[in-house]
Image (cartoon, rainbow, N blue to C red; front, side):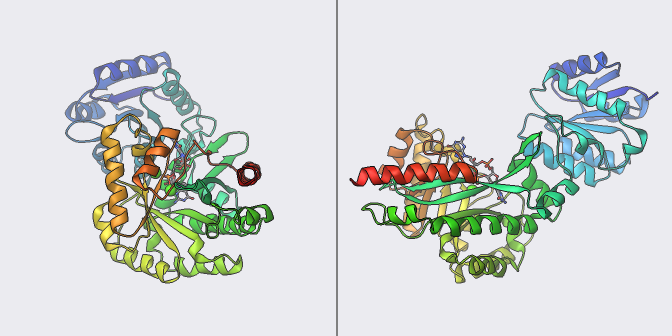
Length: 420
Ligand code: C2E
Ligand code: CA
Ligand code: CA
């Protein structure tokens, strides 16, 4: 019979109380603590088998506490709780697991009532031999908090199971189609879809990001070469207002992946293989984690430009992306993040930021793309400001290949009507 002792650390007494009640229903003895001092005292006195840690604590945060637990070689199973986005929770779980701790699961606040209980039942039912590092929390695919494991990701990448969804990108002035952004999806048969905010950080922390990026680039470039040759679309391009250059494809690449010095040659080879002009490929660079080597990034980006690939600074205005990068690095496009675009209709501040980004981008001779455009009002505002292009639910959600073909058929039909 397993011992059932649960220790909680959370500075919010109400959360402590709720989590405590949930655990008691599963037959656990519970002690809740609100400070680190109390926590480490109870760790010794109470000898818990399961620990619930809140990541956001005043003073020392949950990540530091996790590191201390690892230094103590503590073998309790860990449940990580936070009100922050899932990607933060995933990263913390990954770090804990790499430090040798056993992670039972993650819980996003507000914690759904039954979720902690599900995790505790999982803990009680897991066989003893499963208690080796890295197993329990990754075996929870039926659970909404399931996190994929490194092996799952390798399997998915090697067997081409990652799929791409495409979102059309339109010219602000003419409304004509100018290209697409490829967004990766991991479909798990019978379980649903794992979103990139979960598997991209996992790929990064497991050195699988280059392999994943190449796999995605191959799929995307092959698809673009087919689309560029579609007769109906070729026809469309002859209509007034629709006569832009060849359709482009934007691929998401994390800055970390750019440290891989072979990537420019590898993507160039793919372009040659599928007869796509590298000038039609836009690499959207975002920083999902700190870069180890900014000089390597500068070198790789420059080599991409020499090969005529275009470079976009993704999520501009948020997080890591900074002015410094704009000036130092050879970007050709700024992408305004949907966090600003999404509230443009209601926030004067957001509109000011957008105007400022567009002016800045013009003064640097760069294109501007707005993502996350959901209303006609936002689109009109962007057009007035001189934004180059936009994408968003107003036009289409990202669609799988088949649905995208249907969307393109309708687009061509409309273009024909508007011509006549
Ligand atoms: P992102 O590059 O900023 O992508 C935009 C996200 O906004 C996408 O989420 C897209 O589905 C969503 N979106 C598009 N239009 C709208 C809209 O009108 N309203 C709202 N609310 N959202 C909209 P998604 O597909 O979940 O991708 C999330 C992030 O994952 C991406 O952010 C990108 O950073 C990363 N990602 C996606 N695919 C890849 C990939 O192939 N490689 C890498 N390295 N990262 C990827
Ligand atoms: Ca992007
Ligand atoms: Ca974004």
